[in-house]
Length: 468
Ligand code: 5AD
Ligand code: SF4
Image (cartoon, rainbow, N blue to C red; front, side):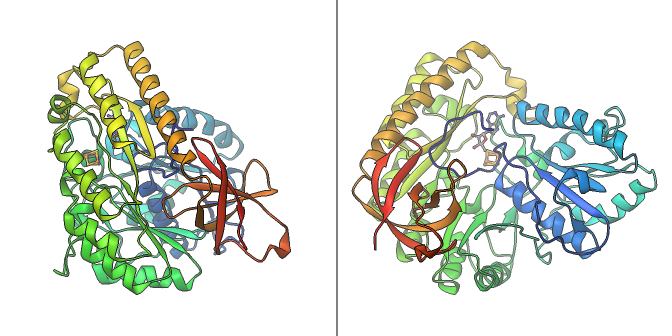
């Protein structure tokens, strides 16, 4: 699934990921929609928004492609292999098309925005192409496609936030709330500013109301989402991301609150101090560093040096001593030398991240880095990736060993996939905890907070037993 090793299971903005849209109790009676989601949490939430729009127009959610009249692929363009997967999937869909010629197939999201019209030419496999800011056009485009007309809508907006759309969430006790869209950072390697457009934030009050309503519906954890949440600004002048976080924490004091993703440049003291003030804001920060070399960071247009990044880490550790940290790292960016690579390994040893998402650099057309070339050979990228993964696994394993004997509050998520006799949940630091399930009279259900003592640990999982 991922090309990386990770010890904290947060799918990040930009990560290839998941299939979704399974609703055991389909709503509506109209034509059936099936959405497959690839990529980041932002895309998962966008899929819920798309479902919201389509259900409002009388569609119902199908349980599988077999039952669907409309199949939409919500895509990711962050790395070449993410796009390759979609092309493969589209070829696969030819089979369903043969069985059901009236099937409407659409490509949504970042790849739709990037490739636009050329997708419509994809061997007659695609009927509609819709970018991230045009989902309101979907019902009409699908309608026309059902009558044989291809359609495309890929304009980016400066204002669209889908604030009035109620996302159709289909599973779990954990919900995403997208608080802003787009990105203005223009890291030189990244396609997101081109596929998702300029930054724009939703009103604070509306986000707070959504969190309250989610609590009432039984959700026990929310993740506030944006490409760079630290630059959130309430459009009505009610403050920045620290204010929003505090407002949500106060409005739903029993709800676990998480957020992603942060940019180190905008990680303010006030935000870190706000996190420390509220027990329900999870002590966990994903703070992508990308590289441990100042020269590479400058080429990446990251706006910080390693020393400035470490200053943020120090502030976090002083203010929230038990805070877990994870990061994103790219190896093999243009001109990266063995020395640059060693500096990345050094930084990882210094910070001791609980987890990391690690990638080989993948050049993306139109970005600044595209013109800088791609001069690190793939074998070198692979070897460097292996090295950082091995180091991160060791660090994660060592950190997890120090959790043995401790007792954590764990939010119960349900049966473990591998062994239904075991259940799993998460600590507030976002570590997965597996514990034996003692039957239906266990005294807890999904969504409860239980206390678990850790007995053993791998680099990815804590194993424990419930404390009475
Ligand atoms: N190549 C490799 N990794 C990338 N990322 C973003 N763009 C690229 C790229 N062109 C990674 C960054 C970012 C994460 C979401 O994806 O590490 O933080
Ligand atoms: Fe891409 Fe940089 Fe924006 Fe993240 S902050 S989405 S890496 S441009």
